[in-house]
Image 1 (cartoon, chains in turn purple, green, orange, cyan):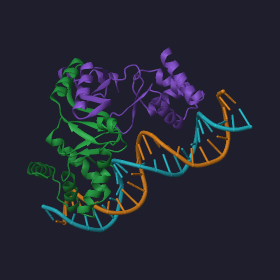
Image 2: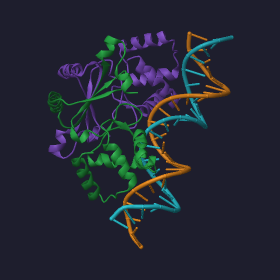
Image 3: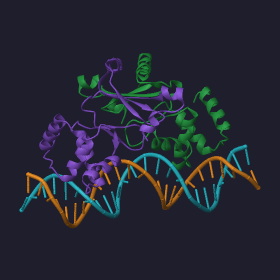
Image 4: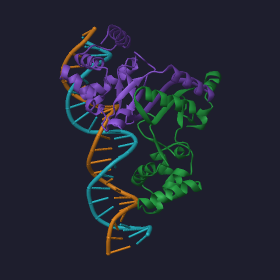
Length: 155
Length: 155
DNA sequence: GTCGCTGCAAAGAATTTGCACATCC
DNA sequence: GGATGTGCAAATTCTTTGCAGCGAC
């Protein structure tokens, strides 16, 4: 967890009158101790490694808090559960490419895309507030080699 | 329901060895009797108007069938329930702008967007298979008038 | 008559919540 | 000491499924 994140978090907790507890601390460290996207369940496991008394309920109660702070972003990838993205505050406009074969998620940013989104929104009489772009496809590698190298890396 | 839809549906049902039942017929007519996006629950109501014996289970069993036929598209708008889009087969590449104030959904297509998606996918070594672009914002109308005209139209 | 279809009610699965106890400040 | 936080288990909500009877072909 970098200093800027720690500081923003600190001031958020203070402003909201939220207390420091061991459980909350463990969850926060788990969240910002990775740059991977994770589910509530995965976070529970990661947090428990740091503080075994963390319960599922506390994880579920903490996640919306962190999202409200703007430091964590809820991701809807079309599964029946939510993912969370701890990289969001560093690049708020980033979008995702998801591999159809191995579910690997690659983040990308594109000024060109942003401009186009703005243009289209205006065409339809909207003021763009947020965007979600999810591209899905197969690794071209897979097409050539017959096996997606990423399959190994990401379950 | 237009003839092309009816025909594609007919051949799909036949190929799969699926039977014509009153319930299934009522659901199908309800699905393609509107061009609005709907939820499973809304579809149940619409189908029951045509055939009161339609049950929730049958609706839930029919929706995946229609999606498999390619004539209906499941939409994930980030709510805890799914939406379905009966306009999908007419314009498979269309995307959505969603009003943050009234949840109104506007469909759009953009060649420019499509090309950009392809370009970005290739940059990251992917062969684009499908895309989901959801723009959110406020009606500019709302900003000026203080009230979104659409609020009336869409619950 | 054979299978697929249906309704009902119960089961699932992720997430939320009520409550009594614990704990931070 | 008092408000906030926590764990547990039960509740919620959308969706799926087992089962016994029904109906299309």
